Image (cartoon, rainbow, N blue to C red; front, side, top):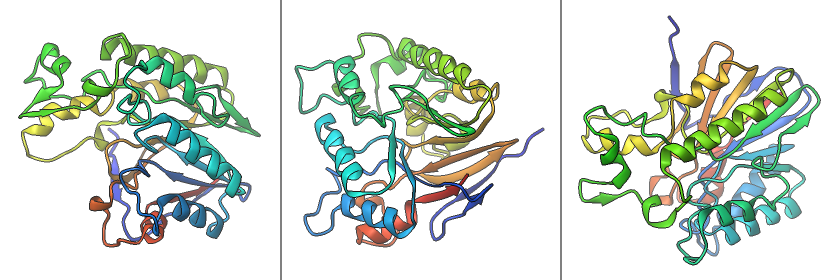
Length: 290
């Protein structure tokens, strides 16, 4: 029986070191639009943190903004203003059509692929390491058995609506979308099965990272956080790091040889003890060396 050890990363960063070749920074859910302040931009804070820590590769696990054009603009800014290579997978906010209601989700998803560091395009191989990733999706498997599939399909409970239901339309059911990404990621993993793998999704891939609290509301809304299928998938391959976002936690844990990492910046009103964007980004940025 494996014991999953989990720690919340608030005050410090832990450096996981295998060899002194490449320093990688990991962050997600930076929400530059919601977090915008003219004199305290998250974008500037990220760039400063990258340079201060001599980060060579920055992995952003989704939710840069709620407008794909803004997301692309930020990615290009990071690319131009930083010495780091920027790798990215979209989050559910990045594919929203809230500001482009005439666009369907597949179009927006493909527009985001225009960014060369988007792992949805293809695997990135550097030496013995391969970076494999995509947004992933949810299939309600993290939801409570007290609900039926039909209940989750509505996306509404406790007088609240899961906003993907308003701003995302893959022209498929959520379960079909999840199967699509599962199959795509399995194919991509197979392509690099001889490499050490860093696996990146936006959606949650391990049940330890869903919301574990007593409020009834999360028995329902945990259904929209990810899928159990990804955890089982990556066990079949030489995955060393499994990176995710979405849930607005900062946690990590290890099962066997796989290190699970979820380091979200989150909304300003969820920041731990600082209004200063740089201080919060510096706390949230997780560093590894490979």
